Amino acid sequence: MENESVLNALDAAERSFEQTPQNVEDGLDVDEAELVQLRRACRLLAAASRLLDDGYYTVVIESSFVAIERTIQFRLIHDGAMDASEVISSHRRLYQRGAEIGLYDDAFGERLAELWNQNRTKTYYRLGIATESQAKAMHELATDVHQDLVNASQVRHECLC
Image 1 (cartoon, rainbow, N blue to C red):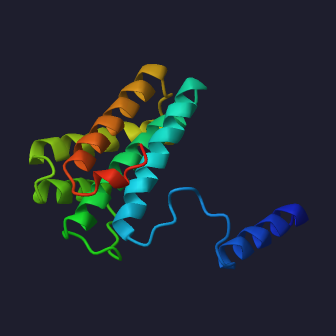
Image 2 (image 1 turned 180 degrees about the vertical axis):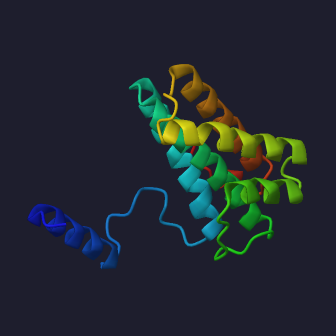
């Protein structure tokens, strides 16, 4: 890249991640990894709700999928089925792990994985165009999954929703 302003922006972005954290996002200043995942899901759902009203359907769909995954990850860590430092690189594997510990049955986990595989990729890479009805349905699904998994935990009072 030869554009000086782009190079300067890259330098600034790199430096920003090297600095001591200041002015952190409200609600995410917790030490427990499980609560970070829980509250990230809460924030994603809140942002998706606002963006849905403004017609940003692709972002709502993406945020909804990520909120579901952060909520599952929260429960995996909370329930001791996953170490906080563990990285699950496959979306399908994350959904399977949730089924393995009984967060939901295998069929539900497989349906989530297929929903992600068949539809998230289409809207994200614009192979299909996101619609209002898709965005609303995904946001409702993410909200319902989140509420169900959080309400079944012992730390539902930590939810920011």
